[in-house]
Length: 599
Ligand code: GTP
Ligand code: SPV
Ligand code: MN
Picture (cartoon, rainbow, N blue to C red):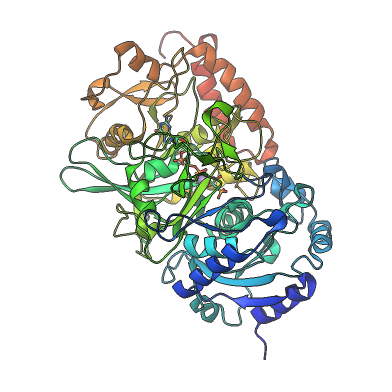
């Protein structure tokens, strides 16, 4: 008798009409075979899916050039299809499920003709973890199949785990004809289904990542009492050898991967990596917050990665063992057959082609590598991987960092007064947009907890869920806000960032362990400069002050924008958030603060 899984595959094959169906087993041999297929496979325009890079200097590394219109997430084509629009909230595009399915069905009829349909059974999370989830993704792209094996735990064992159950998470993906007009990334929470067509790009096509592990999982978390977050996970080891586990949310292309692998510039401090993009946070039996990284690889921003900015990632990229490493949309040094990107160490090669394979030199004034070019690499290559990475229980979190990219206004680091104030501080956070999604770059938009594009339901309800979660935690982690990107009047970043961010981590750990006190400001606590270890850094005092400046006029303006954003959530906005807003606003509006004799 056919299992439920087999019946589902049969049904999809009938609709999409692939030439062949291939069930992935996750083996190393299979990965090589899929890469071979990609090297030989000609796509429209005669391009191969994979190009082998220099086997001596980049063994087991391959270059992929995407369709030029398919280089980033497309938020305007991403929908959450709840039965009712209200559940989706103002932060999501919504389509009625029946209508959405009709559209997708039309687009999917015969879409895999002439192609192979890959069936990929995978786990998000360690198979032994009570928090892990079993999933199956269907795709007609060998690029996606190879990437999935790096990013998740792929294997036949997952099919055994699923058996005849129906509650696994289904992902149905086809690149279609890559026409952006026929591109949709749709989520059907009631059917445990993500259905994506017309894009091969990471967040649109590797359905275990943003689609499942954030949009669908955030909703599961709401129902089951946990949080799915856009957060890295690290362990900070101090000179005495004590470890403190920290998660940090930052919007796309705002520094998670770099912070996750930070090479400390402070003697005795060491950062251990557990994840760089997604955390699932559960309340443990002892009442503390435990984090697991449901992924098993890094899908990271290439430009800017160098031995100077992120040496551990450079080492990770060179440490291939059982997994190929994929470079998507980097430039290529034609003489050496090595990938190249803006910001990498060494001189600019003489003979290059850009990310589309066109001849390139610096006089063109264009980017050789696409600004959102990405590597896909196994987390097991990482030299700083924490020994707790595979711990099914996860690690207990003492501090949550909420970051943003703001060239103005936001101080380097601020500690929230308490959990509720931290939730408000996250809710009001804005960040300048980046190349990780297809939209205008560099404009401030509100991006609460870096989850605006990834929260699968109304964000007002999401804030409520955060507040409720905090009430159950004994004790709740401290919440900090950081901003590495404040600039001077010439537009230059004031803070050196990267490895030097350990100085901020040290202060955070000192605060968690009650080792230092702090200065109160209207936004929360900031460090006394004596407590921020700045030895060896050459930042003039005026600039240091600028890093922490809180200008009431600017803040009045900022809060107007915050108020507009929060008002969108209407009755879904928790009263506590409104109270925190009013309290903050009053601090910046002296005439509203009641003065007079104490009673
Ligand atoms: P996603 O993978 O899109 O979620 O991005 P991410 O949040 O992991 O960002 P990532 O660490 O890849 O950094 C994105 C960009 O920010 C890169 O160009 C980095 O070089 C830059 N960046 C990261 N950390 C810092 C920092 O501390 N200071 C400065 N100035 N730039 C940074
Ligand atoms: C992001 O954009 O936040 C990423 C890349 O991490 S993607 O997987 O495409 O979402
Ligand atoms: Mn990300």
